[in-house]
Image (cartoon, rainbow, N blue to C red; front, side, top):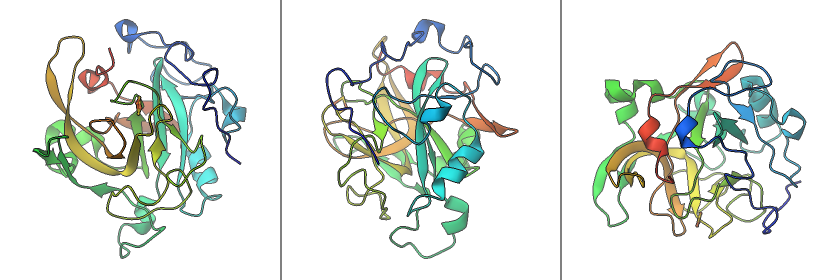
Length: 253
Ligand code: FES
């Protein structure tokens, strides 16, 4: 069962996450285990998420694989913290489905073209396979990690924390706004398809500079574009992030 925390008291913010702030970003964190780059589960207050008993513990790939077995689509996801920054880790049975015909509830990662909100072509998700500079983002271990701050007004989108058509456990191919398993921002209802990887462009709010990034696709709502990927490795069974693209995590401050 999913619980809503769509209340003023329940709305998670950077403050309630205990963020260490961007200035100290990637200086390491005091975790309850694992390395400084380990990603920790973060169970939002008032929720009854599947990872509640693992709150603040390092994320393990096996936990996602086990939870995916309870899903119609074979997907699972969880909120987390990496060096004080909010992330969502999403498990997709990509290897199992990538050679099957595209079909409902057979999810896999899709590499697609990205466009600005005014319709200008930016680039392709295929660049993670074609360009050396993005090689750390190539798909592995059936998982991606998202820097989870909404490019609209910087709320923190979540996974199945509210119950609606966008968050239901189903999947459709093509990166449309139809189907479920979207990351959903409760503030103004922006939606993101975590199975679509595209290239898009964003702005560093500190210095006003535009920059391109590889991330997941916005499918609906007021957000101007999607949210960037964070490269990671699986060390033993522990999921550890890599600080390759620090500029990409600057659009909210
Ligand atoms: S802050 Fe996410 S939709 Fe407005």
